Image (cartoon, rainbow, N blue to C red; front, side, top):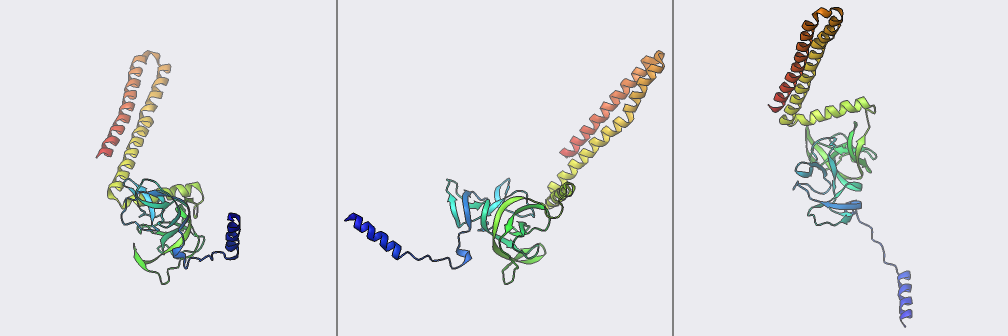
Length: 271
């Protein structure tokens, strides 16, 4: 009897399958297909789709372009979430996600690299080499979209699907030298927004220059005298004692010049 009921049940399922109802819109689709972990968010105003960076206070919304500390994207409707005792929100670090973006750096086309921006938590089109969040899987031109305040005025803001992969992307300067200067320039511009950090950079540069100049002056001045003194001993052995005293004085002055440069650099850094 049980076998007959089982056969009838299987026959019913085969003949009358449960219809599949698709999601009515992309906004209701799961926003992440990778296994996502829960992370504690220090920024209480961060919302779904915002780009997060890691700083001394924890995970906060990114607020600079091409941030090399980008961590991931908040996805409150992620498909698979690895549950942990940590109280926080799901954060996608790889895979597909819905990301908040703007037209701050121009309209976004499918296939464009997306990076962080000066607008809190919002992405922008990457047009130069630097750290990127990933690649856009759809375009966004901002037409009819709400606006947010940007550095130079309102810009359109929306949400697009992205393939998340945080990495350094070579877009405009593939050569190593160009990449190096771009990185240095970006770091300096980022620190200009914080006067204290910019002042520290100036002090370190000044300290390094003082050390370099002190050692250069010592070697170019006193080291030559030492070499000439050694040659003089060979030519005039009778004046050996006097020449040796001169060599010793030059060595002392050479060491003293270096020490003065190091002390001056330390004082500049500690100001």
